[in-house]
Image (cartoon, rainbow, N blue to C red):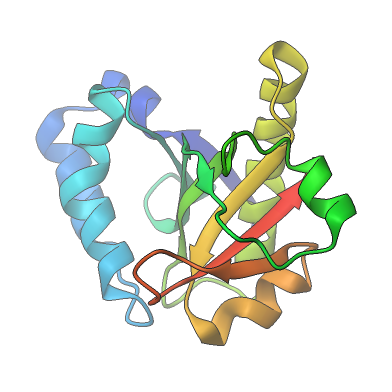
Length: 175
């Protein structure tokens, strides 16, 4: 099966609103109901307000969303980091804050083929690499649950520590 990645904003411009809302409403991700909710209820608003950009991985007939990822900018707060000094230096920390790109959401549909998440992750990093060439910033970050640490490490991310609320793990990769 051939898949394509579409920017949500492009679909907003090309489809009737009700048609797009129906497409989004069909997305099912039982592994992460928060991600399912984000796509259905928040992604459009964030895209329109320039808070983030959402990309949809769809089947070749554009009838089904197989997954999606959302990209944004969000600094990483690093007070009292317990990392190798060379990593800290690479982060360009100033007053405990590092500039970073953010993968805010990454979710695949229940019936998506294994490997879809990696494909979307690679695509997200390529988009950030274009941004790096245009205006700088070398770090990409994300927050994840404990059970996803090994998955993101297998894609080159490093565990930085827990977030401020201590409920998610901060992960980072340099591009």
